[in-house]
Image (cartoon, rainbow, N blue to C red; front, side, top):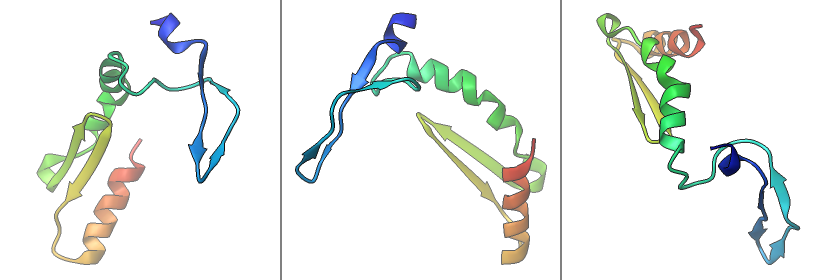
Length: 88
């Protein structure tokens, strides 16, 4: 795994411009078979944030996360979302 995460380089190309190669110091390559495992380990704690008894839900899929809450008013929905997003 260490080899897959070291000595990586890339370049960006857009609007008829191409950068020089530069070193990638963080993250995983797209398509890296380890990325799913690393994502699950790194984000496992996210599933402890929602409180289903308060009608809160969090969905994790591949490299995306989504939250959902239910309330009677916009203000209450906003408060619940803010509370979820700022929990330790």
